[in-house]
Amino acid sequence: MATAHSIDAGRGRTRPRPGPRLAACLAVAMLAALQLAPAVRAAGGVDMSTPYAAVAVEPGNTASFDLDITSNVERRVSLEVTAVPNGWTATIRGGGFIVDGVTAGPAGAPDLTLDVEVPDTATDGAYRVSVRASGGGDAVDTLDLDLRVAAASGGSVTLTTDNPALRDDSESTFPFSLNLENGTPRELTFALSTESPGVGWIVNATPAGQTQVASFAVAAGAQETISVSVDPPDTVAAGTYPITVTATAGDQSATAELQVEIVGNVAFRLTTPDQRLSGNASAGQRKDLQVLVVNDGTAPVTAVTLAGTAPSGWEVTFEPETVAQVAPGTPETVTVHLTPSGSAIAGDYNVTLTASTADGSQESIDMRITVDTSLSWGLIGIALILLTLVGLSWVFQRYGRR
Image 1: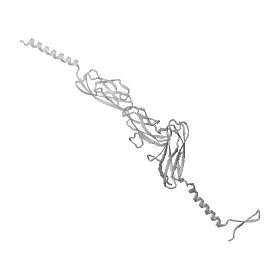
Image 2 (image 1 turned 60 degrees about the vertical axis):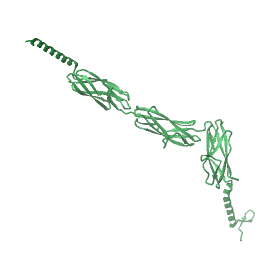
Image 3 (image 1 turned 180 degrees about the vertical axis):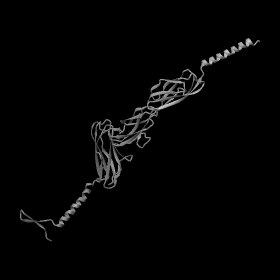
Image 4 (image 1 turned 90 degrees about the vertical axis):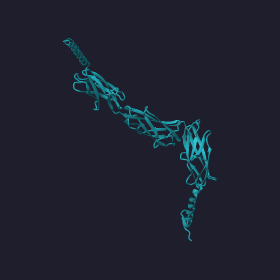
């Protein structure tokens, strides 16, 4: 078989050129080397990692690391914390247990967490914690975790809302939605408390979708929606009222300040101090009665004017004729000066009393007034009767003997 040659221009000699068979052999060798390379790199067979290998933490807090363990074959992998600062505690947890080993394979292992408890006495500085995973033989891996202790590095929690103020009448329920964010590097268990404006207010705060929860957990860096409902008393006066919601977890707390604006409604009526709608009067003589202007609403009633409708010849006046303002729950007393006609005969009469406001609202009551004859006429009648009797007696005495 002929061999290919190339000419060396500098020396005038020829040298062999690699033939096709030699090139093919070299390609096969390179492919085999590439196929074997991963196996060589993975000769250990166990790999351990965490998304965040260096974190900052406050003294007295706990730093949690998610551990990811894989193996080139399914096997049991032993776990051990090999280095931890004096006075610190490092624990591997999973499935509710303290874990010393797991079964790992190419698809990974169960979820694991390394909790590193930093004592209150830890001083600012850099510290290292090491974890060793061993699957037997050369299947070993070590993970170094770096912690920077700093007094102001632990993060905080916040409680916020996009709509801190709502407006409606007192018969409505006010719904608020708050966002609770755990900005610390550890899971926190929260309790909620509320502060209402006073007696009769019902304020409830719970995690969204739950009705009765004493406490709830929020993972590190996670958020939770808090639902707040505010039910004011139906008789509360119009105005703006503050509502406070606080989420507390140990030494961490966050507060949201909310506002409820009650829109007042007007509802007034006329009545009497003893609730009786009847009275007595004498013809031609003034009788004073008292009525109450009562505000059953939640907003003040202003400019209340009173008027009366009575039989012909009667006189009805009010003192005062106009009430400037009637506050909710505070009745105003008005005196009615009522004078029946002098010629009124004894009997029952109807008198209508009306209260009107500037906006057109109006309330009325009907009172039954019983009229008695005047005492002077009664005395005159008695005198006439006596005179008649005296006259008859004189006549009988003088003419009765004849």
